[in-house]
Amino acid sequence: MHSLPVFLKLQGRPVILLGDGDAAAAKRRLLERAGAIASAEDAEASLAIVAIEDEADAEAAAARLKARGILVNVPDRPRLCDFTLPAIVDRDPVLIAIGTGGASAGLAKTLRQRLEAMLPASLGRLALSLSDARAAIRGRWPGDADRRRAIDLALDGPLDPLRHHEADEVAGWLAAPEEAPPGGLIAIVVRSDDPDDLTLAEARLLGRADHVFHSAAVHPDILTRARADAVRVRVSAPPASPPPGLSLYLLGKAAP
Image (cartoon, rainbow, N blue to C red; front, side):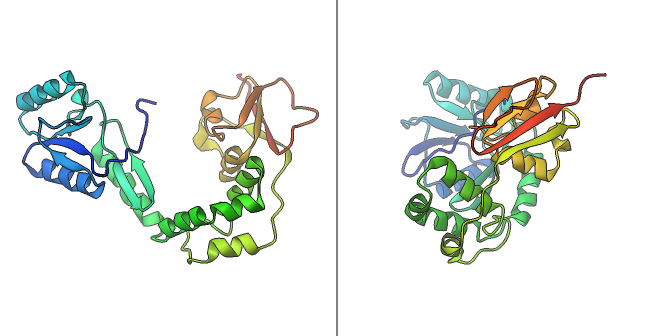
């Protein structure tokens, strides 16, 4: 991973913006959408965007700002950037950021357009409804693991984020009888080292599993598709008594 993706709250905070062309105007609009204050070079700020067209002038401005300890973005000049600005899919409060580390803004834009077409306008409403229902969700599922499993099942079923949602659907889900969460041990034979070769069902199981037991032949790229907080255990055989919750046993394809 070449960069750490973060979301910065910039409401009312200054961000230095240098330049006066189309690129600078676009960055100003982006900063204003985030509530930031586009400011001159002498402002006390932690971030700066140098949208100056002349190469030498842009490099000199970036050097001055970096000398002050300010993180700098220079559009279309990745070698000068301390951070890059992603293409953004905005379904407030859901934000999806797509970055290529400066390799190709065009690729990031195309991916954004594809995702825009996939994600319904009601996605933000679903997020806000889940936020409003947080106390009720905790009340019904007090345990962290039980609550996570219940939410995972809902988002893979009645609350599928890729379809349109009405305002009362989260309340309807909470009032419905509880669906039994998956459990036990499921074995998966990994056919290659490429995570893209996983079936959709296998990828979903990796995203839900509490424990991932795997043979030495399973490539690390496969394991990165597991839930971030899932316990990973390298084993030579499946466990005789799997722990509570959903466990997977991944058996890698042996080298010829």
